[in-house]
Length: 105
Image (tube, rainbow, N blue to C red; front, top):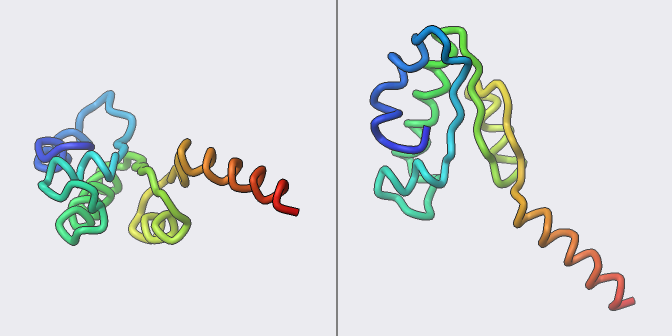
């Protein structure tokens, strides 16, 4: 779910035979809802909760990307079945920082 039509139709999508689950791209969803760069905006967070609830209602798993542990835990509390925590950029930054720190010693 990355756009308003997905959110608006999530009940029908989740109820569709052959749909195995739903996955939320929070940054794309935020941009589509007019909140570019602000996935924490209340409208975006309400949409995410609605998506999770709809998936659960229809017995489908729901997942989401979460940049940090606190977001991941909140999404799991809201009913997400699986959460991808972090990002490729975050992992790269962490590894690069660790390497830089090793040379500062």
